[in-house]
Length: 123
Image (cartoon, rainbow, N blue to C red; front, side, top):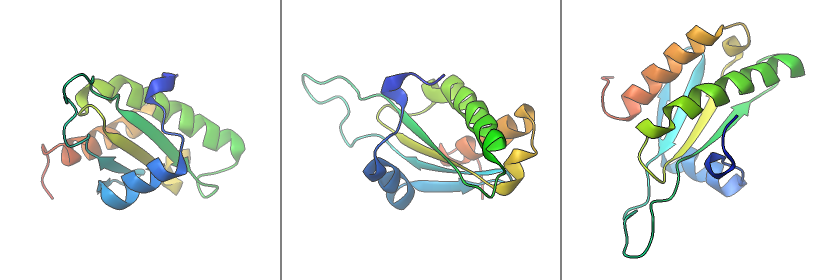
């Protein structure tokens, strides 16, 4: 499970990540990343936590399948939170093929998308 302080909940935060962040698409998912605050280490303030949210539409499958995909994605993102800049907003949007994919395939696509967004990949 994703810790409470790392959950993206407000509509405005989702919109900020999607509209103002960078995007990397893969066959099973699309990752939107809005990098951290301009000055996360302002005097007297600690760096805000990285927060993640998930979008899994009905195109992915029935409710049981959508919930399974969300659980898998939450687990995968939780293990990768330390790789992301503090204060970042991450939105992971599952595409229709994600419902049929296994854990390893989702992990591979998530890693590739994050690597591209963090500057390690090419177009």
